[in-house]
Length: 158
Image 1 (cartoon, helix red, strand yellow):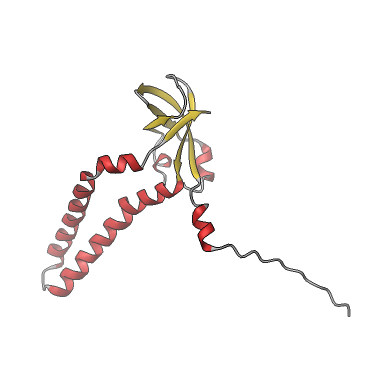
Image 2: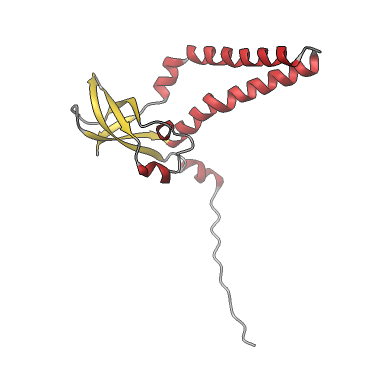
């Protein structure tokens, strides 16, 4: 019976470095359909590459054939140019949080609180919970300009 030595190398990566690398870019290819100052209106066409994208669950481009977005031009562009549009991955996660996770938490919290504190009918509690989501989106809409400054897309020639 021979003894075999097994050498396993385990790399421990500090948690902080994981968050530093989380700033990867999500990229889509599109065509410039218009220009307004420093913004390029880019039409993104869904492609089969979307199925392999690791951000497809967060991305709305997989739900329709074409999306039009405004992107800051990193270099001079012209209508008809094929460009690569980029956004930071952490911004995509933040968008998911603001658009889906927080409204769900608001709705469930309202249902739980009203269910425990009142003896109201479920239909009334459900209606109030839905109204709380509408109120959430109205408040979120008040921060539209601030959010647009944070959620910026950039475009460069492909």
